[in-house]
Length: 369
Image (cartoon, rainbow, N blue to C red; front, side, top):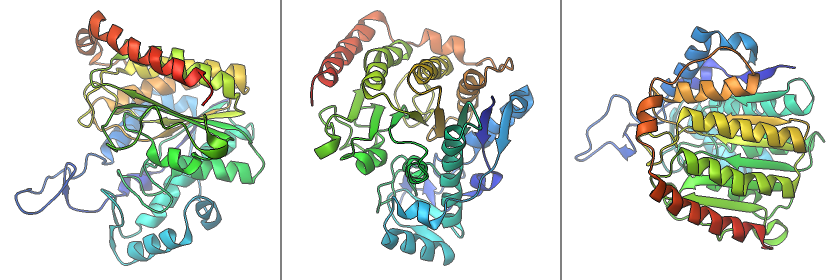
């Protein structure tokens, strides 16, 4: 069986708003040619690298239909969707925080969600061994009625709810290794026992008021939300330790019938929006770990949905490493920053400090909520 790869050039055309990095232009903030860090180039350059190395020929690459109005309404209230559509039709604007869009932005966001929906659904139907959705705009910060952090629709939640509505899945685990807290996905499933949400993130990065380890769900969902806030400077070894000591045991306890990864590459050591020290090899090995867990727990059913990652140079190599693992392809793209990032990794003292934090959290999550 193949690895499905879902992408669409139209998603790269999403844009709008006048920002300089994360600041609205005006006053003393001068316009910036690149605008927001969330721009099409990281995604387009990943797609280009797959073409140049030939790896894309080992993938089942396709687009997908937009998520339907019914799909969207399972997660987002009609009031939000109607306001979004009206502003989109009128030329664009901004409904939330750092979520500008132009004319047609509603349809592009629905297309991004549709890529995630197809990627998960086709794995659950047995059409692919695993899959990757190169979604844009991203989704993991989007609340049901408030978009923020570049995210306009909750892509992963929409995909999960669509699959559940079709009877394709009952218990889904979401692992979010984007460097920013997956607050939107957390909020949508916070009181649900049928979806396990796990977020590894740099503490107090974005949002700055969510993502504490003490937030473990509520009601029926108590214990099915896990936050792993990591300090700035966390590197390759500690990311793998967090996976081994917290993420994999949580998956084994929950026993999902499918796993979805919110796959952001902004934990990269050269990302402009984080201060963590992950490498392309970090993402490769985390993917390998999750693939092994999926093989043991849910017949390998695994889907990755693209989220953040803002280094135009490094994201393509991180993404290529992940897709090499998913597909088993022999096409490689050696990371040109590998040696530099190896030398910049934290020393044993700092790793031991972070390891202590991870051990403390592992004990917390292993106990009843």
